[in-house]
Image (cartoon, rainbow over all chains, first blue to last red; front, side, top):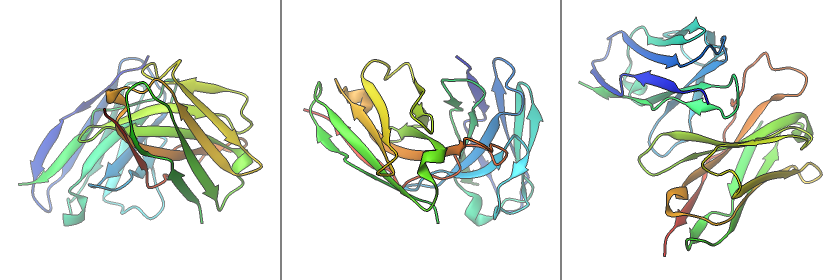
Length: 107
Length: 123
């Protein structure tokens, strides 16, 4: 099975900060990776697909990069509505696997 | 618009069974693979199972293999998850999620999610 290691598990940041979250796969997954945002009590919302493609309607301050085994989600200027938990998902091979999640908290 | 509405959750004793349903609308259900994803209270997301658009293939997480069965009825636009031999660790919100279509995956996977249904396994 493919393991996804997401880091950090949590971070504290202020509005306007640049935030970077990383996911590493223990084997190559091409660009078969998505990023999701989840707020308490809500279903996850897809932000990025195909490692770097921005989901329609998602602000351009979100971006994704990477291929193979290392991937990054960047929020260029953190906004109040961005405080949430973020997950990566590999869909290269079954069983699909999520990263452990990154909780972005207000500093 | 795409709608996925889960139902069938509740409180069940360990060792018993439960069947979840997901009613789909707003898209050609028979053209899309479908997944179940779950989230235990206060924990992260866990992929559970997938069924292909025509029901020809299924895959499961190791944690549920042999106990859970995913199925679908394309005539009713409904996805199911039969959960047997339930354990306390199966307690979670279960989400129904749409895959990409059988002819075009350029827009990626797992874009549309239901609101989830809570399953609590407890004596």
